[in-house]
Image 1 (spheres, helix red, strand yellow):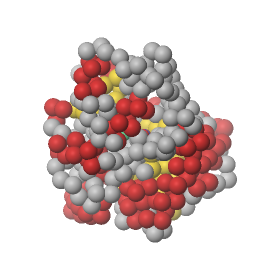
Image 2 (cartoon, helix red, strand yellow; image 1 turned 180 degrees about the vertical axis):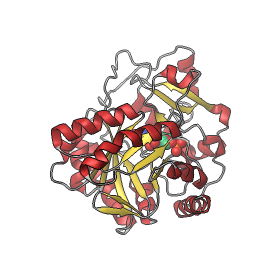
Image 3 (cartoon, helix red, strand yellow; image 1 turned 135 degrees about the vertical axis):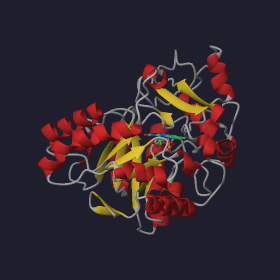
Image 4 (tube, helix red, strand yellow; image 1 turned 120 degrees about the vertical axis):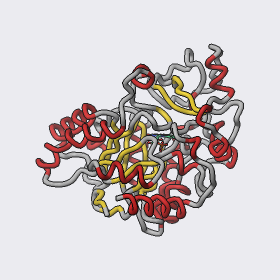
Length: 355
Ligand SMILES: Cc1cc2nc3c(=O)[nH]c(=O)nc-3n(C[C@H](O)[C@H](O)[C@H](O)COP(=O)(O)O)c2cc1C
């Protein structure tokens, strides 16, 4: 049992936020229902609405509200329902405010350091967490929150280089001879949080993310001081995942050699499957942007090689030709479609047996 803000987390597992449309209220609610932390991705949750390309800002906020309500309903009041918001999103502040108002228990921020997050939360009682990829980033965010807001994070996710989606590392860090190890990053983050734990007289639970596959993996990190793990890719191959059957099948069919590091149009490296779109990018081609919803800094629609929002939406729908299929480095080990309940059961049993 881990204390997260004002709530208790029964299982040591966070289901990582996955945009666009992969983790919405259906998946997050089911994870929460069985005692984990289910995370809704706030990346264009309104992508399926007929008005999306005309009025994305409005449609996204309304969809996020509905997804939080849906997750809460499915969870039946169990577990924790969180929302993942990317700091790089133009709508960042509005998405955070909407998630809080809709009743999310926690806000987790990735793709940038959420320096101003506490100001958006004032008095809400909702737990907040940054996703960091180094001890230095954990120290920076704690110092800023401490100095300007007199608080420390309610929990922290440390994401290593094996994760899926956008990665918080420079390309040469991911391909060089000394790729950072999650265990090492976890140890650094725990050390950086120690002074803030002491100052605030409470624990700051840390969850390890990126390539965590089995309960034994979770146990390796909890033995080092983590409160648990954030796991994403494995949750795609569940019946309750919000992605289309086409995306799920791609995950089940993926072999280790199908996984590539790619350069996202928003400047960060990312990890996904070598789909036809990625092959076209490797050949130096461009897919012209027809319509832009102004989703992420610092994308420039006039020069971007392709529209990441369109590519992620097409993937979510199972369109292999035009989609960008994010996944973690261990996707080749995902072989079976399961229910969320059985995945959580299996992970926790393995974790207990490995401690
Ligand atoms: C399909 C997919 C989409 C993702 N989208 C996001 C996102 O929108 N925001 C974010 O902070 N992390 C995102 N991630 C990262 C995950 O939340 C998670 O931290 C990471 O993938 C964990 O590694 P694993 O997939 O090996 O378990 C995404 C990952 C995947 C696989």
